Length: 277
Image 1 (cartoon, rainbow, N blue to C red):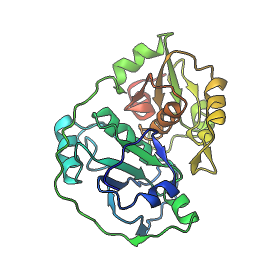
Image 2: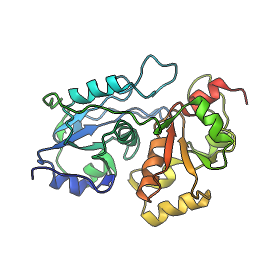
Image 3: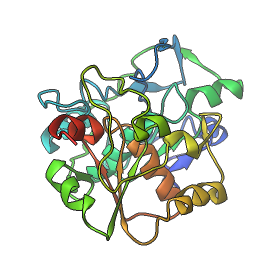
Image 4: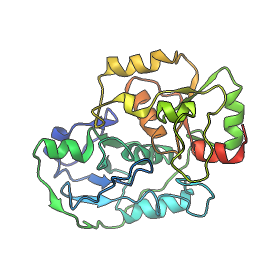
């Protein structure tokens, strides 16, 4: 096959296996450690033709005071070109948790004007469960690409925006943290960060959108999750601990046709640090 373009933002492992040799396809491994887990083991194998995309040190403004901060247009363009991203590329991104940090990469690329990208449903765990081929970790370097980023300022919200959204009835802030963290029952995993909740926000733990933590639930089940918090025609603002799993909610919303949304980049790490109540 010469080239592909995506209709939906999620593809199956079977689909990816059947398109591994497509000319314009790039495969990115967006795996990162979970801050909420002590069991972060490094994988020795990857899906064939994969390149690692580093969202902690490379696709991130590391000079910012809070983790996982959106980078500049210049930085994003430079690093995407290093990975061989062209204007006509098609990207599939996965991670080793199932659906976790891969959604952040999907959201970042969309925010910088690259739309031909999809998340691998179930990620590496689903690929392995299907007994599909693996290769030992390697770089698979590509020639420099020609993609030029164009940042959409509506994609992300920041501290001042979120204070406005909190009091705006046309906005609905949805927090992707666990129910106990959202309620302040469980402590925050980041040392020194207070527990709490953004005023007027509601909770959909990102794991509620997933079957066995790996694949997205059916469209009907996803709609039930959003209906349960009475998500109507408001602008949806997704938050979490540090801007990673908020993007899982954004991806789930997109799957059911809710495209009027944004992500609070600093999420609770920023909000809880800059406020006292």
